[in-house]
Image 1 (spheres, helix red, strand yellow):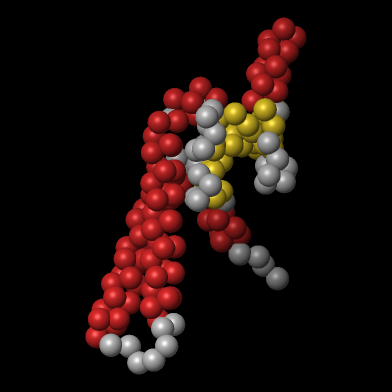
Image 2 (cartoon, one colour):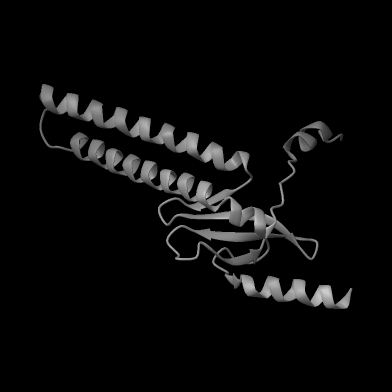
Length: 158
């Protein structure tokens, strides 16, 4: 049986590998986008909960509660759309959001011929302080100092 080779090729996508300097230079922009993502997600969650609360009210809804429910649903959809638009901005840069509420994202780079990620944390005083290999568990955090020591050692060996 023939496999659909074209379909497999279409799904492949090259990821842009960032240098540490590029990631640090992009921090102001990344901070802005990740903060926007967080605000949009929080707004969407709030509006979805509000709409749910209004829909679960006991008894027959009156005109005002129907209008309030419709407005909450519309506001939630708008916040979801703004979230998707901001997320698309990150995806164009090959930056991947881990947790919008916690303000965490991953920035790809190559380390020793392996895919690795800089861990961006919007609430850390130093947003780019950690990294992890792709194969590491998601909560793994390695200090960036390890990378800098590796680079220094390679310079002396060369």
